[in-house]
Length: 396
Figure 1 (cartoon, rainbow, N blue to C red):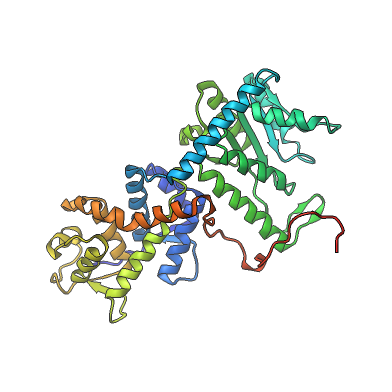
Figure 2: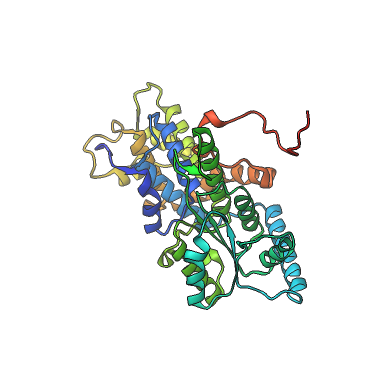
C-alpha cells in the first residue's frame, strides 16, 4: 500500500468535522489530538493524520446515529432541575417585571454592555436587565437575583479585562441547570494586564485553564460558545423570536454547534494502537492483512476474511494477499472503512458498539457528575496537590 502522509492542522480539525455534519466540542478535539500524539509517539499534538481523522469521524457518526445516552441517573437530575426552575419562574412571575435578557459576566472596567450589547438589543426591540450600575447598593442583590431567575436568556460575556471568577461560576451553574445560556468568551493572552497588573505565567495558566474548563462544561450541555458579541446577540434574538433552545442554533446562524459533548472518542485510537502492537511481534511498525483480520476479530468478535479485506485495499497494491503490509496509519483507515459499513461488514457494528461503548457507559453511570474533566492543555507547573479554600480572615 502507498504511504498516507496527509496531515490536518489542529486549527482546521473542528471546521472540517463541521463540514461533515459532525460537531465535536473543543475538549473532544483536544482529546483526539492528545491521544493521536501519544499513540504515534510524536513530539507535537498539532495535527491529525488522514487515518486518525477518518477513525474519529466514523466513530462520531456512529455515536450520533446510535444516540449514546447520558446516564439515567444524570438525566433524572437534569429533569428535576428543569421542573424546579419552572416552579421558581411561576412564583416570581407574579411579583417581577420580566426582562427577556439578563446581561451577566464581566463588569467594571468593561464597557461591552453600553458599547455593543445594549444598542443592539434596543434596535431589536429586546428587553434586558443590566446589573452594571454607576452606584451599587446592597438592595440590588435581590433585584439582580430575581432578574437572573426570570430572564428567558442569560447572556454572559467573559472578558479578559477581568479575572471573571464569579462570572465563570455563574455561567457553569446556569449551563448545568439547563437554562438558556448564551456565552461569549474572550480568551486570555500571555503577558497581558488585568486590572492594571501584569499577570504572571502561573496566573495566566490558571485563568486560561478556568476558561477551558468552563467551555468544556458548557459544551457538554450542547451549548455553543461564541467569541463575537454581535453574532451572539443576533443568535439571542433568534432564540427569543422563534422560541428555540440555544442548542438549536446552527452554523448558518454563525454559531459553533456541539453535539454529544459527553462522549469520549480518543480512547478508540488507543485501543486500536494496543491491538496493532499486540500483533506487531517484530516491532517493525507493520502488520500483514492476515494480522489485520485477526485484530478486527479481537475487537468485534466477527470473522473477516483476507478476501473481504482486499476489497478495501484493492487497486493500491499489486502484492500477494498474505505479504501485503500495512502500518498503523493505514490500519486506522481500514478500520474506519470497516466501521463505516462498506463491503457488507455493517453487521460488525452490532458487536463493535458494545465492545467500545459499554465500558464507557458503565463508567459514566458509576461516576455520574463526578467524573473528572478531560485532560485540558494546562501547564503542569501550575498544578498543586492541595487547594486551601474557605474563609480569608486572618486566622492562624
